[in-house]
Amino acid sequence: MIETFLNLDILRAAWPVLLHGLGITLLLSAMTIPLGLGAGLGLALLSTVRTRWVRWPLIAYVDLFRAFPPLVLLILLYAGLPFAGIEMGGFGCVAVGFFLNTGAYYGEVLRAGIESVPAGHSEAARATGLSRLQTLIWVVLPQAIRNVAPDLLSNTLEVVKLTSLASVVAIPELLFQSRQAQALTYNPTPLVAASVIYFVVLWPLVRLLSRLEHRAIAGRR
Amino acid sequence: MIQARAIHKHFGALHVLRGVDLAVAERELVFVIGPSGSGKSTLLRCLNRLEEPSSGSIVIDGIDLLDKRTDINRVRQRIGMVFQSFNLYPHMTALGNVTLAVRKVGGKSRAEADAIGLAALERVGLADRADHHPAQLSGGQQQRVAIARAVALEPRVMLFDEPTSALDPELVGGVLKVMRELRESGMTMVVVSHEMGFARSAADRVIFMADGAIVEQGTPEAVFGAPVEARTRAFIGQIQRHA
Ligand SMILES: Nc1ncnc2c1ncn2[C@@H]1O[C@H](COP(=O)(O)OP(=O)(O)O)[C@@H](O)[C@H]1O
Ligand SMILES: [Mg+2]
Image 1 (cartoon, each protein chain N blue to C red):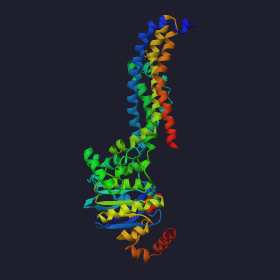
Image 2 (cartoon, rainbow over the protein chains, first blue to last red):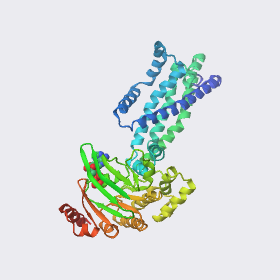
Image 3 (cartoon, rainbow over the protein chains, first blue to last red):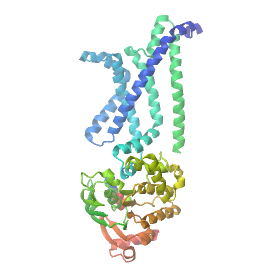
Image 4 (tube, each protein chain N blue to C red):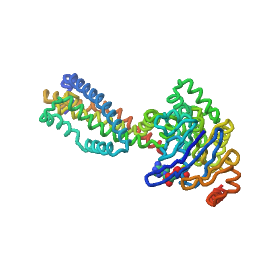
């Protein structure tokens, strides 16, 4: 049993490949999180505009990409778009697909955050002569981000997990690499190792999230 | 100092201000009373363009407030506003609240702004609370910090919208004392409030508003003691019974 699922020789052999995969996973996360946050911030700011011509496309966008399974989106970009003459390659598809998907989610979280800040705070800031942008940067966003910190972190956890989908378009991230190693060795040890690595990387974030959530509940009392 | 003429304000079909004329002289304290919903807050908010009047003209300290070319953010520094609900920024200390606009709009360095901010907090008797966050302060202290936040910008006019209405009775006195000192220092003030005692001792003129218009105005003695209009009499009778 241990020979099968935790074969040390195989683990030793597969280790460099897995580490390389972890590197790509972290790289994908490091690319997707800022992109998604940026897109989300843009969407959240746009949602404060009350004009119909801004609101409707915005609602359509957010609804579409929250309802769209990210795996389907990715495969559509990868295997569908070439028929329209658009070839982005695996990495390009992941960048675009994750950007669209996580942007919609971050956008909803940040919108809720901005709406949680009392209008009176912005008015007080504007009354002292701060511009709209200064009010946003110094008064609204710091409170907004603090108010939805648990949701932002939880979303970020999901983004790291999401990167494993990149394996279907042959990006050599952690899951893909462990599948390769498993296929080569006819042994599940690399998969077990990959699972452990995911856990070790994500667990501190999960702990942090729990603490933030507790603090948020205590703060509300 | 303030010349507002024929101010109208519509919210959709609602006609909230119906041609208000208001002139306030330098160093004058004008006290505004009137039933809830009569448009007092809307009028004050028009005076620093937090609300855009539907029509009319407003000139403050020689500046045409409604001119498209007017840099409203510069003018607003000259017009301090204090709200019923304090509206302090909860993520900043008292000093942070007071110095934010001094730094970002006034362009002062942090050291200069801190000196200005501490002086402003000193004026409202809260220099020793500079490092406290709003949540650690009483309502009265929060409102005094809000006053310091406006005062630190050296405004030419201060607008107060029911500054003591959200306070426990025992905290009202401290805020009124600060307002009185501000008046004695020569500040031009427009105060919406129900504090008739303060009006009697500090106001130059009392204005009674109803249904979006000025119904009656005069010295505190005249308006409180011998109101001419029936609506004024009824309203003053009402608040005296509650006081
Ligand atoms: N932003 C707004 N949108 C629509 N109606 C408003 C708005 N602000 C105030 N009103 C309405 O205008 C009227 C006057 O309000 P307000 O100026 O706050 O009166 P007061 O301060 O004298 O109680 C009220 O009927 C109020 O409901
Ligand atoms: Mg009001």
